[in-house]
Image 1: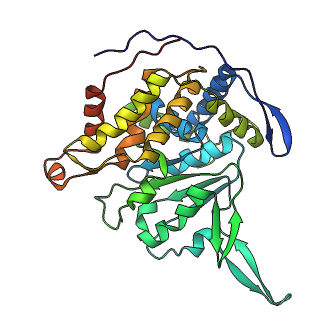
Image 2: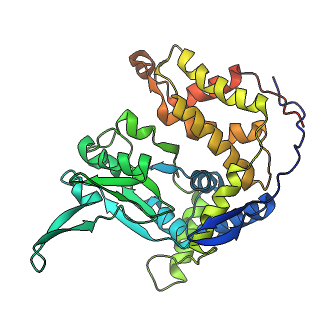
Image 3: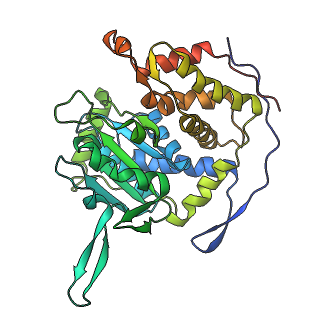
Length: 343
């Protein structure tokens, strides 16, 4: 089994889109790719991390999705989220999830105004372009679920009144490994809301030495990041992703991969139709990161583990045998035939 020769479809014309009430010319895909790389370079100036990790986060942002980061404390997850917000020139709020956190601490609440004799809505930290849900699995499921409406509908409902969230809006959630004491597993419905899940891991020796060197060369405790684009330009960048051409055979490939997870005898619950759509969206974003207006099988392979693994629920027997979801995804990749992409 191997990747057959791929051809390039005709490029689509540039689009013009309305962003924040102003008319913006849609970026061509080469410009979008270079802009995305500049954003990654800016974030990389502050965060010591593997290139693939940062590219995965950027893929989620380009695809208008939410990103889940899993690692032990102290690896730089919070700095990563804040650095992306700064590089994109977007508002940023952080919510520290704890066992006593209430849903209203996230969404906001109505507060009595003594001057007017009425209740005024006080927005919670979810009303920002980039929301960091820090250590989300340290709060109980009821509180975790407070993010579901925001992540799915980009709005929150408080006391029967719906409030729209700002655009763009995305959540970067961090969680500690579920084996750690004091953690609650994310509900299946909430895991499915994240377009990708990835892990930073510990830096290698050179990376940890660079952390020390960087700290020695600055007076501030945290490194600074400069903005790469005006925040109003991000929707235009995301719009470019939506015009990427995906060949019909490649679309079939995406669907076949998702369906194959449901047929694996180690899997109790496979990838949902929503998960298959998210892989398709992440595939197009991966093409833009490479500066292309068309997708190839390697784009699918680049993001499929991050898009699928966190959605799988394995059987009890698979858990006893030490099987992990990433292994299942890798095996599915080996089983499903890779298509040729025609011009």
